[in-house]
Amino acid sequence: MRVSLACALIAMLAGVASIWAANDASWPDASTLVKVAFSDPIAPLALSIDPAFDLGGGQEHYDGLYYYAIALDPFALGQAHELIDMAGYRYGRPMHGWLASVVSLGDQARLPEALLALSLIGLALGAFGASRLCVHFGRTAWGGIVIAMSPGLLFATTVSTTETMGTALAIGLVLAWVRRWSPWAIALIAIMLSLYREQLVLVIIGILLFEVIDRIRRRSRPGGEQIRRTAALLAGPVALAAWLVYAHAQFRTWPTPDDPGNLSVPPLGWIESFRVAYGSQNAGSLVDQQIGSTAPPYLIALAVLLLAALWAARKVRSPLDTILILQVILMASLGWRTLAFPHEMYRIPSLAILAALAVLLLAGASGVSRESSSPDPASR
Image (cartoon, rainbow, N blue to C red; front, top):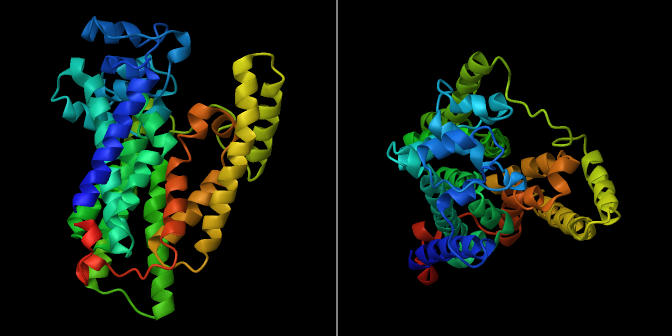
């Protein structure tokens, strides 16, 4: 357990160091990380709540402001939802903003600090959960330190987005499932996970898919406890569906992105990303040239990692394998807008990368928890 706590602390310190390094080696005001630009329609509202709110330049606009808006206006009944673009789409993933509102204890001026706290807590919980998952599969508890090595998660910490806590919930759900936690605990995590980002429902589908495959292999029927656990998992998608119906009633639209290039037909999005990267190399700007020249090798390395893990997962020994398979399908369906630029290139595939590393690191593991058999000295 001490090693797992150490992994959590290291991950949190890595997040703190990333924020410090990304802000000219100084600690910024938490509102800086929300990335509200002075030109954003929500900027006057932010200043009216906190006159010291740090607004950025026009290029500093980023997704943290959407979760800030949801925290201000949790059910789209107030003003904030009218001050963001594609509000119907943004409100399709409300849990991060809701949690920030809870963590701030209703003090809207403290919402940036609440969003920052969620990022750091997400790193710590993710590392702790990954460590315990490694122990369950008979590997070293130090495996949890991989969270502190994820560029995507560390970047998300610097811009107050959902990836750290979303990843922690995904890891927590897998751990809850394999460790046979109470159906009530599984249901709670599944609901929170589903309302964090709709793509995270793939984690639930992956677990269910593994259970179906495993039951067919063993030619067994689920008992009462298994049925209750399955129902608990399904509570997540049901909660998301109910919320989307509510959001549709509020916005008169389903939460789909309007920007072209987010998704594509595999592998056309990847091919287009290489074309965009090549065009950036010849755009004239030094920054564009750097992005254009480094994106293709990164994407090739990512493809090698995912394909290697996909091969390792082919025998479907654990829920991690089916989760990885679904993540690979999702990654293959991404478009150039997600793959060709660093701010999305590192952040969006972060869960898929962690799933791939988990499958590779845990390949051949017995699936029997050391916690339930012989004690693991390294995990204490």
